[in-house]
Image 1: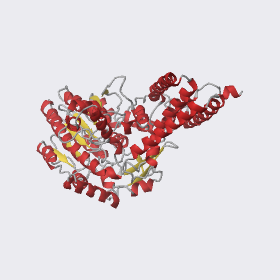
Image 2: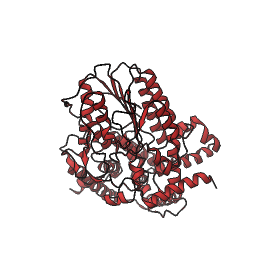
Image 3: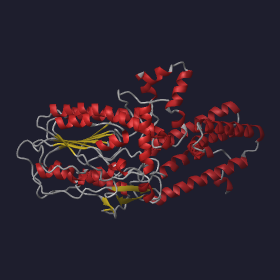
Image 4: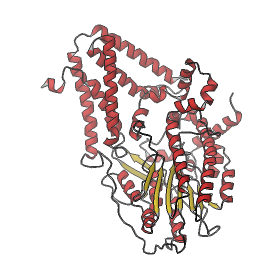
Length: 570
C-alpha cells in the first residue's frame, strides 16, 4: 500500500509541475478555465523532463537529476516571495535574492550528489508530500464547483432576445455608431493635477470636430467589465447590495451573459444594424450576434492564464528592462543602442510588445470599418492608456518596468509613463477620429470614453481583504474619473448631454435622441468593486459621495512625482 501512495521512483518533479499550474489556476477561479491551463501544464512538464535529462547527463544519476530539477522549479516559483520578504530599503533586492538562491542551489546540489546514496525513502517522502499538496489544491478547485461546466471550458453564453416597446428605426439613413473604449483614460483635470499633463490640445481637437465633452464624468465602477456591461444594459448590474441578479455559476459568468445579451446590442441588431467588436484582449466586450475581430498572435502567443503563471516566477524580474540592458552590454551593444534602436526594442520589450501589437491592431481595424456600408455598430476596446506603458511621447517603447507598477518607489516613473502614453495615444486617436469622420457615408455617432482611471493608487492594495481599507487608502478621484466625449450629429449643444454624464447613461441619451425611446437618465453613481477569491464573490461600496477625495499619502506621491520630473535627473 505504501508503494502505491509513495512509489520509490522520482515522481515529485512532475507532480510539482502540475501543482504549480493548479495552484495558479486555483487562485484565479472564475476568471480562467481548465482549457486555458492545459498548454501550460504540458509545457511545464516538458521543461521538467528536459531539465531532468540535462542534469542526468551531468551527474549520471537519475535521482540526483530529478531532485536538482525539482529544486530549480521551486526556486523559480518562490523567487518573488523571497524578494518581497527582504527589506524594501535594500538597494538591490533582486541581486540579493539571486545570491541566496544560487548558494541554496549549489549547496543542496553538492550535498545530495556527494552524500545521498539511498534515494528510496527520500523519493517516497517527497512523492507523498508533493502529492498531498497537489491533492489539497485539487480539492479546492473541486469545492469551487466541478459540476459547473464552465469550470473546464468556458460555457458559451446563450443568445436571448430583448425588445423595447418604443424603440424605432430612424426614418432617414440611420447613423453608424462607433463606441471607442480607451481603457483607463483619466479625465482632463485629473490628468493635469495628478499627472502633470495638459490635455487641452486634444480636447480642443475634439471640440473643433463637434464633440461634446463631459468635464466632470466618473466611471460607474473601478472595473472594465462592470462599466461596460452596465453601459450596454442601460442600468447598473450591481449596487451597494451586490449584483441585481443571482449568479449560481459565478459572477464572472453573470457579467459575460449580461454583456453578451445586452439590451443595446440586441435592440440595434433587431433593426438590422451590423454589430462588430474589435478587441485588444480579454472578453470584456464580447457581444451576441456580433462579428468578433481580435488579434490572433498564433499558437505561440500566451493566453491570460499563461501570463499569470509566467508573472508568478522569477522570469519577469530576470528579464526586466535593466537586466536586459546589462545582458545586451555584455553582448557588445552600447546603452544608446539598447534604448533607441527600434528593432532591438521590438525584440526585448516583452510584456509591452504583447500589449502594443494588440492596441495597434484595434486602432487599425477600427479605422478600416469606417468605410463599411452602414448602419454598423462598432465596439472597439483599446487597452490604452492602461498600463503597461507601451508608448513614449515619440511613439517608441519607454524604458519603464511593467512589473513595478504601483510600487511607492516607482510612482514617479509611472506618472511620467502614463502622461507620455496619453500624449502619444492622442495622436493615434486623432488619426482614427478623422478617418471615421471622413470615410463615413452618413455622419456617425462616435463615443470616446474611458471606463475608469489609471488606478495607480489601487494597484498594490487591491488584494487587501478589507474592502473599506482599500477604499480609504486610494486616491478615489484618480481611480474613478474618466474621459467622456461624444460626437452626436445634429445634436450639437442639445439632446440633453450634460457635464456629469457617466457611461451608464450613454445609450439612454443616444436612444432617446435617435431611436424614439423615452428612457430618460438615471442617477450617475460610482461603486468600488472588490473580489474575494476564496469564495469567488464580489462586493460593492458606493463611492458617489466620496469619489472626489484623495488619500493624503497618494496625493503627496503624485505631487512628488511631478516635482521629480520638473527637477530632472540628479
